[in-house]
Image (cartoon, rainbow, N blue to C red; front, side, top):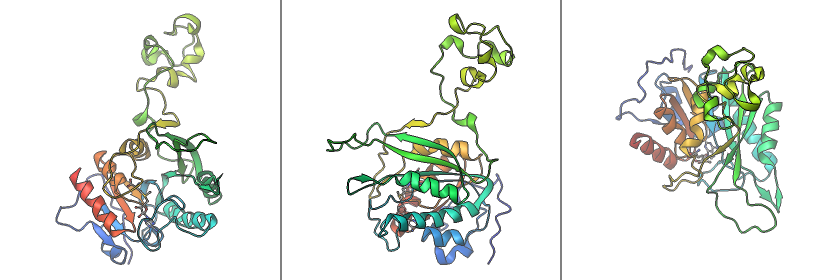
Amino acid sequence: MTISLDSITNNIPLLMGLDRNHIIDVKDIYTVDFNQANCILNGDALEVLTKLPDSIVQTVVTSPPYYGQRDYSTENQVGIEATIDEYLNRLLDVFDQVKRVLKEDGTLWLNIGDKYIDGNLAGLPWRLALSLKERGWILRSDIIWYKPNAMPSSVKNRPTTDHEYIFLFAKSSKYYYDADSIREPHVTFSENSKMKGGKKHLGKSGGTPEQGKNSGNGNLHRGRWDQAFHPKGRNKRTVWEIPLSKFRESHFAVFPEKLIEPCILAGCPEGSLVLDPFFGSGTTGVVSLAKGRKFIGIELNKDYCEMAMKRIFAT
Ligand SMILES: C[S@@+](CC[C@H](N)C(=O)[O-])C[C@H]1O[C@@H](n2cnc3c(N)ncnc32)[C@H](O)[C@@H]1O
């Protein structure tokens, strides 16, 4: 059966009625009205993805299970493969399908953790990122998630790890990215230097609002205008300081909502569709709805599907 998503519009109600079943088994995917979205598809990510139509999703935000880290109590779970190569190949196959279901101007925000094997750091995030590039993805940014409240560790012969990577990939060179929606406060220039002269300063040499050494510096008004004086703040930087999430309820490795807010805001306009193929406790769904987007989650463990749906409706 072919499922058409052509008619996804901005007018669709954000949630289907509470009486509807939003957790759909992989064998029942043909019953899904993807126009409504906001559902969890219960099954293996690769199997479910192969059943979805092409080019329906604007952005994907996800964190696959890390290698050899946790047991998510399901057969066929990702992360317990015998070798790193098997693990990486499995993820690569999943992300081939993710690319297919993404719109041409779509993006993928991928959070992935590393692993020490016999005391040797495996370098998994970059191994995966480079392999994804070989499979045709365009790597646009490596973002460091700095965790100020990371678990203390007993290691004494290396620094304690308190960061993870988020990679921003694009399907094609022209992709949707709303930089204005995630700007940061200016920090490198004084209060006095912010947009004093308004947009009339753009492109003009001299007459800079800067005093002292920057006075009359035309460079500030051309290439660096956006950085120095943009009224909405400076362009988002690549180190994001976000504390670990407090949401627990028997699921591990929950995204902090603040971590994925910028991905969803910059990655797609309101009303569009966000996919998380490793949905877990459903943070991507919670934030998507809160920001006026729709979601599809894929999750192998039925208990997590139910926990996620409960959490989404509670929020
Ligand atoms: C790191 S957790 C995701 C957590 C999520 N970002 C959140 O905020 O709760 C990874 C999830 O992938 C699920 N998973 C493992 N293998 C899977 C597979 N083959 N297909 C789909 N989901 C899978 C696990 O059950 C787990 O819930």
